[in-house]
Image (cartoon, rainbow over all chains, first blue to last red; front, side, top):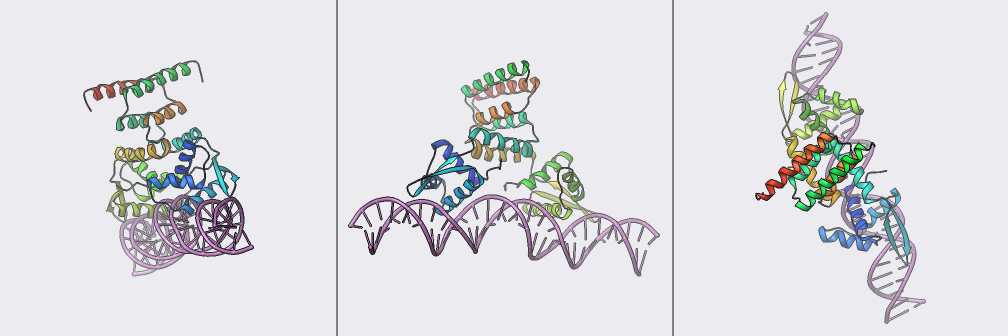
Length: 127
Length: 127
DNA sequence: TTGTAATTACGAATCTTTTCGTATATACTT
DNA sequence: AAGTATATACGAAAAGATTCGTAATTACAA
């Protein structure tokens, strides 16, 4: 699987959140954050299509694009790489940095605790 | 602070682990993983020096390079960016992915629990 | 059918990062 | 001092990612 670039990731993000979309829609969404030309977005999505990151179908004169890679798989892949280069593969270090530097609610902390418990149970069972 | 590129990060990693080093040493370390020419490494380190990422001092005919940015600060910076682009800023999601997809020992899980407890206590006290 | 607006296709310019060839300088050995 | 090995300096090529101008296409309305 090819690692999506930053620009590609922004587009995937919108497709994951909103489902199949036209170039026009994606470009409108991107434009709320930064200035970006329509053909720029179009070109990027065409490249992603060639790479196999997106599928598309015609609807009249426009194309409807669809993400072919899942959010979860992509996040896992990016995380693996990031963990290696920035944290030498130590998930624990990263986790502590992430929790320490960013606000997390009590509810979220509890959810993480439950998650840790499950994790431990499953590890004991083997796997 | 300028975000280090991937190549720069690899060099910083070695400097953080081994302390002040020559280009030769860095290049040898890099070469264990992948093929990389000596002048390539040299050039990269010269650029990092110009950017202010590294300091250097002469020792005979060679330079000894030293990281000017700390591992912690750099990790925090990279993590912030990564969290935004890949996980929409949700530290919890990232944490769960990280723990779920990578092996973590029971000891490490316990350490994280203690960390969570501390975090909560300090939050109650008001930041 | 003709004109208009919006879309796609394509190629090239720009920008960033990485790689490396070549020239020059420095220290050491004989 | 001359020769050799290793270092640095510099510039430019190569590779990757992003941006955008322009032309061709399509759908629709007058």
